[in-house]
Image (cartoon, rainbow, N blue to C red):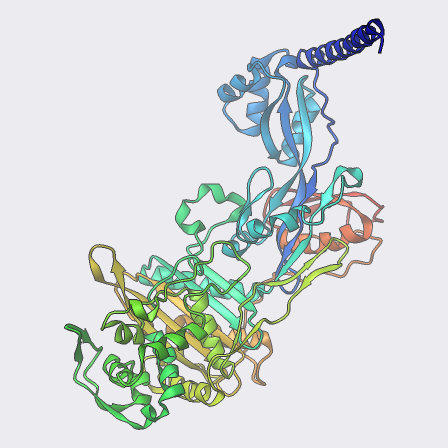
Length: 612
């Protein structure tokens, strides 16, 4: 190529690149030093987070449109006056607000997701430099109900705990993929839980009362549907309100039910007996002597009483440590380990919640000479509430283990199913006749043993009490206890398994004393709620204060007298039919509404509900 032509081309290309570079620099300079910022006041948030409902469709979490206030400090003409005016409306410090308005920035948040009446008052004043941005605020209409399951989100709408965290991609619409949605709003998927709101409410109420009565540190209730593994309730106390989670310390935010593990104590005797019955069924025909203590590997293990000479039925009925330990002598370590492993101890259940622990079940080669006997009565093994409940549910299910699950369905906004609940049957863990023998012995615990306070006047109950001493690091076993009771009902065809755990009661009372009354308070209403049995129990308090009237499709429903949760249930139906937007003003019950009840409801109309 001619050298002259080549140089000319190089010069031309260099000139073009120089022009482009200067253009970019000028544009960046202009954007950086511009006196205006371009943010549409009507721009919607990018994501409308999906609903979370209980199994019957009651809303536990939803997103509502709110206004967020921000400022361009360079456009604010009088920062001092603006700070005083806005701070009075938002009830914030004027000094802190003034600092924001004096920053050398073009964008500062004043407050995210403010109340509608506050936004309206600020908007009417028309202060230069203040703007609103539409965002979706996550609200929990049932307040603290199932908060340990549902979880909560941060200010930027990202899940931080519970279902909100574990299914963040689904709820935020990220799981669907695809490009930018029409209108700039992405709708997340909706999640339906297996939780029954009424049963969850009862469980939270009763475990809360027990903690107050016995001055305990924390407690849990797990309610499982025996044949399917559905978690009907997963209560934990103390609880918290996810609407204001930041006001709580870390302890109540932690889900004791499946994150923390503990030594189960005597409840595990049922699984130890299962191991013996599977391999040495003759243990039920033998007699054992309890003198109140036994020495194993230079360690003395005490019993709750001197039971004398008793058979296996009474050993379980009165929770005799000596009897279980003596019967365990003829069983190999591996046999006990294999049975406990079949019941999935030492393995996470796979529940659809974040942070589940597997507990502790050591390999037999790591056991000491005491371990087999210690584990047989519920020590040297660590389990979660959920693991223990699932194991008892397997016994109640004729020896077939079904994985516990808490997700009923995941659906797109239009109702298209992404996932539907299907029982995850893990298989048989013990023979059917073994399970029947265990249930018969557990029935004796309630009729005449340590679990008599768990009895029901309407249904046959079988169960097992447990009281374990708490292990303190560097100190060994203390006199503090963890009390529990695992029960199933009805005995003839178990439908439900309920586990009660009360951690560190102040008076160091046993599971038979303090966990069984909680079970007794739950079992009848739970079974009636499930439709089990012909006998009905009268006087069950309704969870809802007012039923939702059907929506005609064209006229404004009457919301008067409804609480927030009830109003939301009806609003969701109205939103689907008419594409309305809505806002709440105040708290309590609806006393005024716009439009008025019976008025024609236009497509895309705005509904305002005033509560007090």
